[in-house]
Image (cartoon, rainbow, N blue to C red; front, side):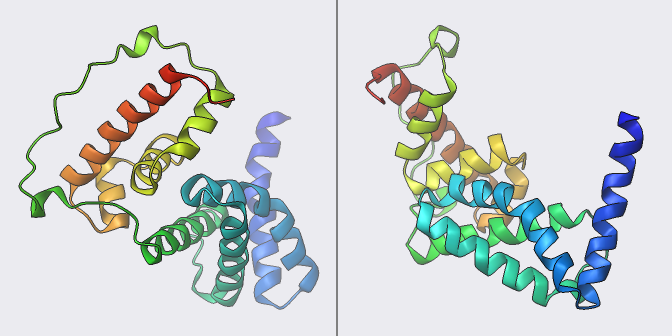
Length: 189
């Protein structure tokens, strides 16, 4: 029975999308209900601001609904919508001058020698991690979120952010070190 439900869910979503393309207002509301919470959380993890994430969510749905004719069912509607939300979130950060430095355009070659942190010794709790991620600078938080939470690889992130692969790798390593450092410092409550 579980396998049957997993197979029929995309079909039901495809039917909703087709009804939306025909102008069925009830289907628009159903799609919004099905995806809004997950898309809001995706945006919030990137922009780290509740109000901005709400605005981005609304803009993403407006754009998605206005562009439904371009949705070709090559991916799931959710994946297509998530890409819109991620792009809008990143563009929002760009407008706010997100601190990503292209490593190829600087004289910095390697990460500074910092205290090596033993990840295995750090006892991580979900709430502590969430609080620590919110404290990261925009660039670090964005790369870390796209890699760890959204599942993009470094090459995909480099393409999304329009920076080099080396920059993404460096930002990720620095973000991870900063995150571990924040958690070890404690006091995130």
